[in-house]
Amino acid sequence: MAKYRIANMTIELDLIEKSIVLPSLKKYQIDDEKVEVSAKVNIIKNIPEPKGKIVNKTKYYDVYENDGLVIQYQRRDKDLSYFGYIEYGLNNATIYILENKLSEIQLDEYLLTQYVFPYYMMKLKNAIWMHGSSLAYNERGYLFSAPSGVGKSTHTRLWREYVDCEMINDDKNIIVFENNELKLYGNPWSGKHHLDNNISAPLKSIIFLYQSKENVVRKISAKEALMKIMLQIIQPFDSSAIDNWSKMIDELLKIPCFELGCNISKEAVDVIKSKLEELNDENQW
Image (cartoon, rainbow, N blue to C red):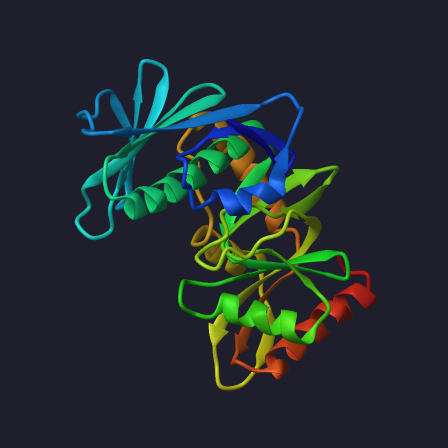
């Protein structure tokens, strides 16, 4: 088992030998430090019938409470059958994955481990997870969010081509409230391109993208931002995390949020960068 420091939480992971997440995890590996959370992966031949009280049901997973454990049963996209489950203890989790060909097990492990980390982050810290692509620019963090397929990764790639900035995370973004400010942290669960860095930056704005022939930016109200944020965040299914999660939503609504209609061009970057720099010049953060 190896230890990793991610977003100021130390987690110990016992993964399969050829885990696809390990290369990204190495950027976060540490040696001697007290472990806050541990997780172990087991390969099994059968998944037992769920028992206990069902507390959450979605298209992709069912969550039960049974004998003090929170248990998440994960479904496949193609046939919605269970391919694995996670038992969440107080500060340790066990991940069970159905025996299959290695490539399937690797993908299943990647998916299930990326549920484990936010579960404990939201339970133990003032933290929230949000889908998007984030950058650090001038020591400030910016999160670009939108439904899948709109072009978040393409837009942040253009930033990296034309602007002196650094990728934080290209998929699942950890936002933590600490020292009276929101901070974006890199983490290894960063989508199919595995674009992430072990860095952090204060979150200064969330920009919601949509495709447009013309590049146009508009500041949106807190009410508009709330509706968009709720579509892109991971919601807790442990009742003990709900209060902290709600406080995090309140903090997110305090920062400026924008809607950016954009095409695939340098001008799209210039339009939003100019607006963000204007806020910085006017000290409106």
